[in-house]
Image 1: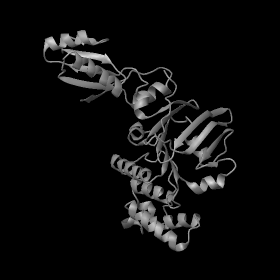
Image 2 (image 1 turned 90 degrees about the vertical axis):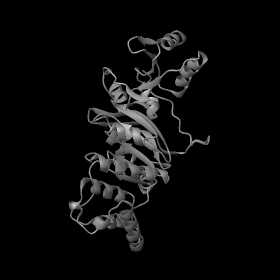
Image 3 (image 1 turned 120 degrees about the horizontal axis):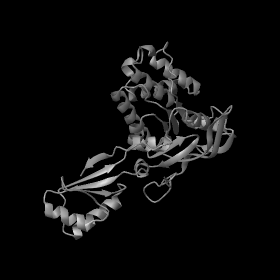
Image 4 (image 1 turned 60 degrees about the vertical axis):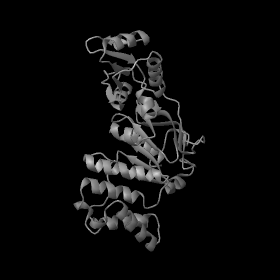
Length: 333
C-alpha cells in the first residue's frame, strides 16, 4: 500500500497557499517510549488539517510541540512564520489552543471566563468587554453569560472553551479532540463553528477520534501510527488507497447485460441479478472511462452504484498489522 498521497495545497486559482504550519523531522520521546519518529507536515493557511491516530499515537504530543507547550527532541517547525524553538512568544501570540480537557472555570460565570482571557491577552478593558460580548453572542451564550459555567451543558462548555480561545483573534487554532463527549447535535454545532472560522481565514489543526468529523471538515488528513505519518491526503485520496472499491452495473434486459459483459473488461458477473462488478478506485476519471465504454457500445445500464471504502476502512488498514475486511459503502447514482 502506498505510504502517502502527494499533497495538493493549491488555492484553487493556480497559486499555492502559504504554509500556516510546517514541520520537518519532528521527534519526541518520553523515556524509552518514542512518540514521534520524525514527522513532516505542511498545512496551508485557511484550511482544516486533521490528524488521526489510535490512542497514544502522538496526536496530542504533536499539538503540544507545535503550540510550544513542550519541546521537541529533534526536527524543526514553523507556526505562523515563526520558529517554535527560537520565537516561541511570537508563535503563542498567533495561535489559540483548545485542549482535550476544558479550560473553563466552573466557579465563575461564562462572561467572567471571557474577561479573564481578555486580561491574559492584555486587552484594554473596553476592548476586552467588547470582544467577550461579541463572542458570547456569536457562540449563542448570551443568555447564559451571567450564570456559573458549572451549570452549563457539555456542549455549552465546549462552545465557551472555543470562544475563550478566540479572544486573542488567533490566526491558527489547535483543536485537540474538541467534540469528545458531545451529543450529535452539539457536535454538529461545533462543526458549523469550525467551518465559519475557516471561511474567515483561520487555519485549524484538528485532532479527533471521530472519523466522520475528519471526513466532514478536513481539507487534508494525516494518519499517525507508531510515531510516523502512515498516509496523508484528502479524504477521497485516502479512501482510494484501500482496495475493494468497484462500480456495480445492474440491467433489467438479459441482452443488454450480455452485451455489456462483452464490452467491458475485468468484470465479475452475477447472472441471477443481471449485475456486473467492475474494480474501481472511485475516481471521476475511472467512472468516466466506464461510461464512455458503455456509450460507445450503445449500452445503457438501468442502475449504476459506486462502492467505495470509507475513512473507517482507511483507519483500520493503516493502524493495524493485519488489514481488516472492508465494508464498501454505496452511493447510488
